[in-house]
Image (cartoon, rainbow, N blue to C red; front, side, top):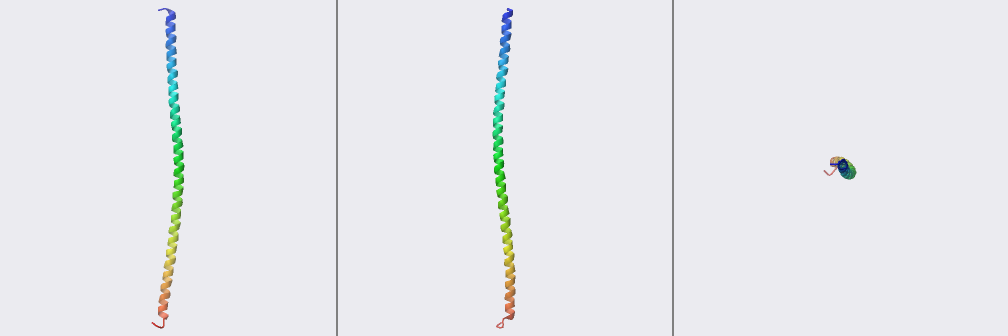
Amino acid sequence: MSTVLIVILVIVVVVAVAALLVGGKRKRDQRMEGRRHEAREHHEQARLRSSRADKEEAAAKEQAARAERQRAEAEERAAVARSERTAAERHGEHAERVDPDR
């Protein structure tokens, strides 16, 4: 083989290898960009879901606080009712003692 032909073959092989390397790098870069895009979407979904969870948690705490206030009001009313019942019984007993017709 002549020297010129060998040089041309070496140049062709070097260019082919360089083209393969550049093509592989581009493909890898495209895959990486695809993964970055997917990761950004997942991060956004995580932020949205976290925000919704925070709102639901706040609503649940508010509802629990309302329920606690209602329970306290019910206990207070029950205490007032017991007090009134006791007072009514005392008045009834006193009325029985002082009633001249009995």
